[in-house]
Image (cartoon, rainbow, N blue to C red; front, side, top):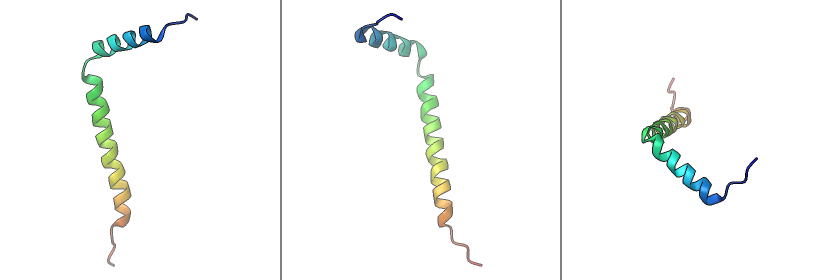
Length: 52
């Protein structure tokens, strides 16, 4: 196993992120928003009153 200096690792990570494009960020944002909406629905459904 080779030792890579931190600056080389950061440079490699930055170039990989540049090659990946904006698609991954969109996926992360969409999943985050859907997760928040699902969590809100799950938590708030318990507060619904049942007037029987």
